[in-house]
Amino acid sequence: MEVTADLSFIHLISNASLLVQLVMGLLLAVSLLSWWYIFIKLFAIRREAKLTEEFEEEFWHNQNLNELFKYSKEGAWHEKGGLERIFVAGFVEFVKLKKQQGMDASAVMEGTRRAMRATYQREMDRLESHLAFLASVGSVSPYVGLFGTVWGIMNAFRGLANVGQATLAHVAPGIAEALVATAMGLFAAIPAVVAYNRYAHDINRLSSRFDSFTEEFSNVLQRQP
Amino acid sequence: MNATISYDPYRFPAGLLALAVHLAFFSLLYFGFTWQTQPVRAVSVELWRSLPNVEIAPPIEPKVTEVMPPAPPAPPLQPARPAKPALTKPDIVLPDKKDKKKPETKPVDVKPEKKVETKPEKKAETKTIQQIQQEKELEQAILRERLAIEREAQLAAQAALESAEQAEREKAAMDAALDAMVNEYTAKITAKIRRNVVMPPDVRDDASALFRVTLLPGGAVLSAELKKSSGNSAYDSAVERAILKSQPLPLPADVAMFNRFRVLLLKFRPVE
Image (cartoon, rainbow over all chains, first blue to last red):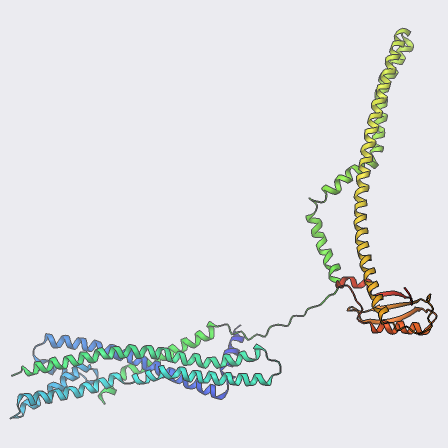
């Protein structure tokens, strides 16, 4: 039982033609990478959502902006969420512009908003990194697997033509080998597609949250003396 | 730069998890399927033509006898019981008759006789009349019994005879059917061969050639041997050629019947 299973499973891969083996190897690598990114993004987005929640709460409860800024400046930069960074960037720019004499209020607000937008863009880029990879894995890897399968089946039938008497036993192993490629392609593609849709939705929500915070924070700054 | 740094904490656990997912998937593939690669084992089959009938029969028969006892005993025993009495009862019954005679005649017959001889003669005369009547009655009774017993025996014997005759008749019918079939096919074979005989000239009408034809299953002729010449060698060889030419010879579809066609003695005449 064990021996035959071992033989056949390894045979399925080792007996396949070189191209099919290459396709399988590629798909395995792609699948590993996409799963790696899936988990990275899962943790990162979860953490981002949690930090955003925490900072919003902090921001609306603590009316003293200077204190909040001091507190935000203290911690390690990479442990902060996107929202906090936007806040820090906007506040730093606002203070700098305020110190300069002869700036009218609208120019100060304009500069602050630009600074916040730049940080927002960077944060979004960070959050969306690797999502494109997941999307292309989801759409392309089934085709790659299918290509391997078609190639394998072509080989199987060519082998069949060489044999005088055609039986199912002659074709079946070749087709099974070939189908392993499709299975791997689907195995890589399905989670990638699901993860891409889920993460795109989550990031969309985060971005709208960042946007609304930026607007609200601008209003708060405008009210500053 | 800042952005990339914030990824650090998740890279390692995420990589481990990805590996775990793949290991799980491949272990599922590995253990979840029974990869059927064992070639189907060759099965050797022995083909029997006619023997199975003979070989299969014995194992079935004991079963039949085991199962049958409730049923067959009833029919066989009924004829058997009467049949045995038919043979045995005469032995058993005869003593009965003697016994009956002895007790019935002696106490009744002899004692009165003694009385008749010793005691008053008148009474003896009257008694003798009574005795005669009694004796007659007894004899009649005995006769009746004997007749009854004989009838029973006869009936039993008849029943036994009838059952035996029935079995014989059935056998005879079977044999007759078989013989009819053999005759039918022998006639067919002869007719087919006859059609292929190219008559040589100058063959006498009363010439008759006897051939011993050995057949193979399927109707092929293994050998055609001249047993008795017709006296005209041209006719003999014409018949032999016809036999070989008319292969395959018609045979019954039932393969078991072939044994009766293995060797045929065929007689050929120019005019039937």
